[in-house]
Image (cartoon, rainbow, N blue to C red; front, top):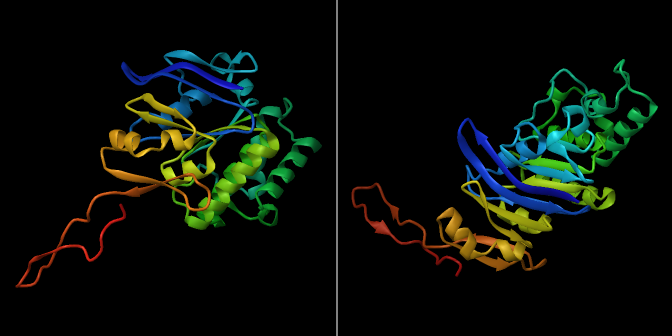
Length: 279
């Protein structure tokens, strides 16, 4: 089990994350949601070790990841970052092989097992046919899959994803999150994922942590956390939350009437919306 215990992080003297405690079991996805500036990406950076915590610990298998070296930590967790920082001239295969860096010998040479892990990661992400293609020639959705393949090739029990569906269209969002869901179950991964889309969080996550102002406001099953009361208090906008017609997961809809349309012609006048909002 991954345990984040009373984790606090700061930039200079400003505390941006305060006493955050979360836990994730193997095979589970925990989604971090909340408004901009809530501390979601900061939490990912703190757990990954990119940003050393002010206090607290990150425990897995009885060991504190915050006390490990970068290379030791890389055998426990892999990160799919928010930005696609991939070398454009690398082939897909070469980019995914970077995930094996923590396991290479002192000469930096990949062995048969490393290449087998890369091939398996390419197969799982449906990238095998693109193995020899340059990163710079790929679409945004394909590059996102390369990042996930690199993380899978790293073969760690913990997977951290920071807004992995940003800039992806509806099809690529669905394909990507379905793949993450399947990998979490098959490999019994512990997945911590930042999502802005509340409906995707409700659909794909086992549990949800709602953050605001650097603290956890609510945590639990999606239906317990993604409620109209919680969201309205954190996002400061009225919403409706109804059950998904097929899955029963929380579905978030905007509330309130549309702003009246103002005509710009000489006889301008205010017009009400032609239809009523869903209530």
